[in-house]
Image (cartoon, rainbow, N blue to C red; front, side):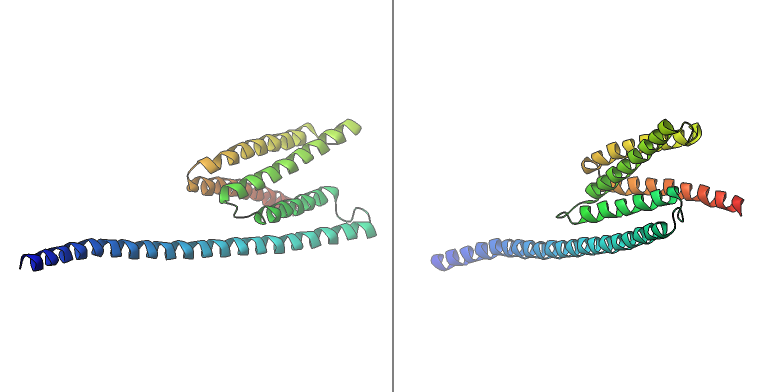
Length: 199
């Protein structure tokens, strides 16, 4: 009887111990499956982002080539300032596509790459203004030069901010991108208003 009771007690303890262990193993397995699914979803999202970026790059490349061909056939068919904007857009598309080819880039890295690309464009614009005014004074008015210089300074601050995003909460990247979108919308509103006045 004592032996039977002892065996029963051991059995009871074994069941009580095995129960939580089995549950823990099941829970661990469930988390592993969930993490695996999340990794697959993230990988698929990155692949689609890269595919989209490459498709957009092809579009911008074809657009640039079309306008350059038009200017080769008839010089100045497309104004220089318009060509400058198109080349900048093509360069930005190329930089984004290259960034997304990187293994597992996060949002902060992508935003930093985009900000650095915009800084390169702003620096090129400022050099163009300085070179033009050095060759022929007042090619760009003081007001126009001030806008280009201010845009360069803003681009520098964007890069500085983007470099800190990796150390900040994930939502910071979203807020940073939304702030830039608001700025772009404001710029578009100004351009639309100007075009409306011309009409």
